[in-house]
Every structure is written in C-alpha cells, then in structure tokens.
Length: 225
Image 1 (cartoon, helix red, strand yellow):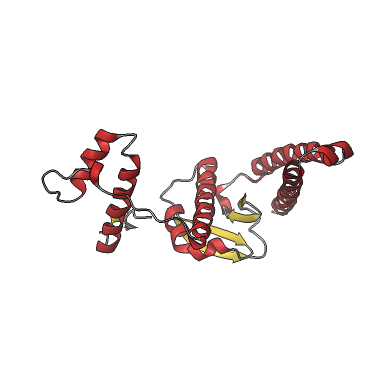
Image 2: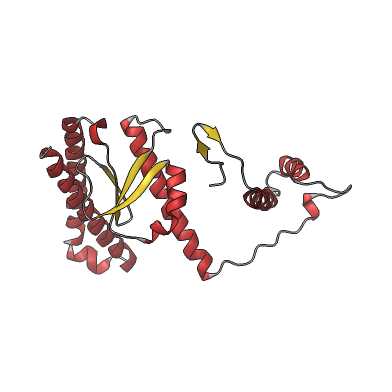
C-alpha cells in the first residue's frame, strides 16, 4: 500500500507523510524482531534515522498499546481485503493475464470491504470496482467468506474449457457436500460431538451450498454465450 503508484509506466514520488509513516512502522517491526534477529535488526535500525553515539535498538522502548475493539475490526477488514486481492491475483495467474493489465472487479452486492476500494484497486491493479446484482457471464468468480467477487474476462477465455473446469469444481464440491451431509444426518454424531464441531460442519454445508449455486449460475450463463 505504500508502494508508489505508476503513471504511464513511471513510478511517482512518495509523499512525505507516507514516507515517515513507513519508516515508523518499519522501526516498530525491527524492535519486535530484535530478540530473534539481533544483528540485522540493529544494523537496519541504526540506518533508519541519524543516531547518537551509543544508541542501540536494545535500549529503545517498544510501546504498543493493547488493541481496541476498533483495531480488531480494522484488522478483520484488512484481512478480507488481502483475500480479495489474492483472489484477483489468482485469476490473473490461472488465466495467464499480465500483472500490468488492469482488470474490472465485480462485487455481487455491497459489503464492508468496499470501504477500502482505493487499497483494493491499487494492490490488485484494477480499472474500477463495480457493484452488480448479477456477475458477467464470462467472469471468473471467487468467494471470500460468503461474499462473491468476479473478474470479467470477455474474450480472454476459452468458453468450453472454462465450462469443463467449472463442472469439475462443481463435481468436487457436490462430493464434499455429500460427505458433510452424511455426518450431519448421523444422529449419534450430532448428539455426541462437541457443539463447535457440529457448528463447523453446518458452516461447511452452508458455504458449499452457496459455492455450488454460484458455479451452476456461472455454467448456465456461459452456455448461453
């Protein structure tokens, strides 16, 4: 996120506030790592700022306040952002799309990750993020939790090959769901297993059903092309 933006293939200068914050974050990380990597962290710490004779990272205090509820909420949101960016990059990799080529990201319905559109756009190299009711039939879709995202691919895909790949994924998910349902239909398992284990199986069922429905929609849309 602190990497300078590229305009017409040229890196833009970083602003002073971002530069100072980056050094501050890096210094904190060095202090955290120091007990495990004493020599390299000391060397890097000495070069971050002008130091006085005798100053050492060993004697510099590390003051990190306990995370607040807002901090935890932000951490969860950023984790979701990371998964969205990873999903777009996975689409690029699987479709052999160059990292420098900008893509569109479709979001099926609103979710809180859109509060970080600027970060997602930059890290995933997107032209824009579009909220849709139905995704493009050519899109490569992925899930982050229960939220669905899609990257329209237009003429960049082989429709028949894509259908075959989705059908293979669908078959795998249907087999996985059948195994989960077999567990949940076992009265002895439901009655004797810890509540957390049963809840996890029910979540697997719900997630699988959503992914299966999404795949079926995508396959049907591609067959209409």
